[in-house]
Length: 134
Ligand code: HEM
Image (spheres, rainbow, N blue to C red):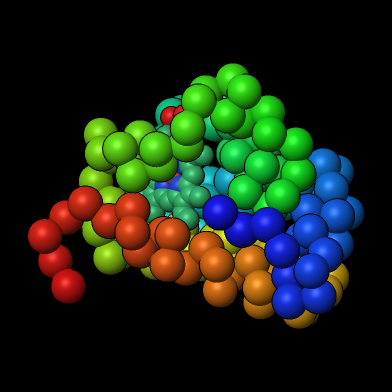
């Protein structure tokens, strides 16, 4: 779990807490909705993303060292097993990270914070893969 930057500050606070995460998650799914390179990734998500957005907001807040509402509501994240029902291959991983990188650029002004977040999310997204490739 990601809780700290190298300066020992909680990244959740560094980027501005809940309002920033709400903007980030909205932008992330808007990009997934509109980018041609994310079309297949979008297609395996629910048609209505309202609940998906709500849960990703809770998860990211907790993962970044903010309030633990995600686990209070859903228990241990068990993210890999929660993704087992969806095909996560190299293409899906890369499309997910691509949308996240662009969403961070649009909503988190600090390049240092963006880099720290992407560095921690990249192995997490890779670990989610459940197809026998690469
Ligand atoms: C670091 C990478 C990722 C993180 C942090 C993440 C996080 C999450 C979270 C928190 C949920 C909700 C789980 C719950 O119900 O408690 C979720 C759902 C989901 N994720 Fe991911 N995920 C990642 C990568 C991916 C990738 C690469 C795919 C590609 C297939 C993917 C596809 C999905 C789908 C289809 C759902 C269900 C959403 C819905 O029902 O609309 N995720 N993810």
